[in-house]
Structure formats: structure tokens, C-alpha cells
Length: 147
Image 1: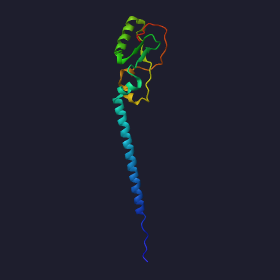
Image 2: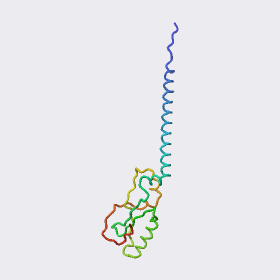
Image 3: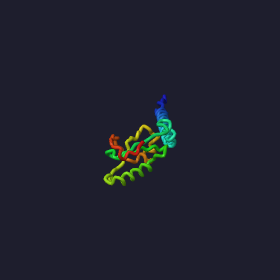
Image 4: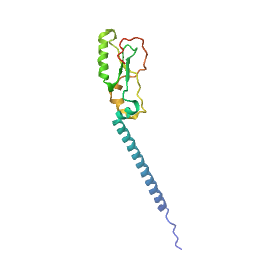
């Protein structure tokens, strides 16, 4: 009798093809998921103004002050009280009070990393370029250019 056992490489080859196919689909799935996440990030940062309109309202304000609250300013960009106005007022304040020439402005609001639609603004916008400091209360009215 001429009996030869069936070679086992056929089943191993089928298993190998199945594993390769599964790997390909998993790899493809991760690639598609990554593309979708990247697209959501790009689109949300492009339309962050509209998203912020619904989440924060039209008249969002930002508060700035010096370390000991000698100078304070609240910006409302939608009303024209922007960073440039704050810089002009701060320069004027330092001219009027020479003893405060070495003051530095700080923002008193934090960046929220969970608001991924603002990430581009956090990096590029002048509003966020100042260092963060916790807001301190002041009894003086000198240098208060806020609302």
C-alpha cells in the first residue's frame, strides 16, 4: 500500500492567509479611524468660531491683570475691546505711573484641553499668548480698564 499522509502545509497556509487578511483589515481599520479623527480635528478647528458661538455665547470676555492687580483689563473681542486696545491702555497706564514700568500682564483664564476645537487658537491667537496666573482681587480702582 502506498499511503502518504496529506501534507499539513495546506491548512497552515490557510491559517496564514486568514491571519494576514485579519491583520490587513485591522491595519486598514486603524488607518480609517485615524483619518476620521484627524478630519474631525481639522474641521472643528476650522469652524471653532461657530462652535464657540453655541457653547460660550456671543459676548465671551477675557480678563487680564498684572501680578498684584495694579492694572486690570477685560477684553470682549465681539464688541471691539480687543488685545490691541488692552496693550494701548497698558502702555498708557505705565506712562502715567512710572513706578510700574516693569509690570507684566497675565491672563486669568485657563486653556481647556478638552475643547479640542480651540487647540489651533490656543497655539496661534494673541489672546492666549500671555502667561496664566490665578486672578487676584484688588481693592484699588487704579488701572481698572475693565467693565
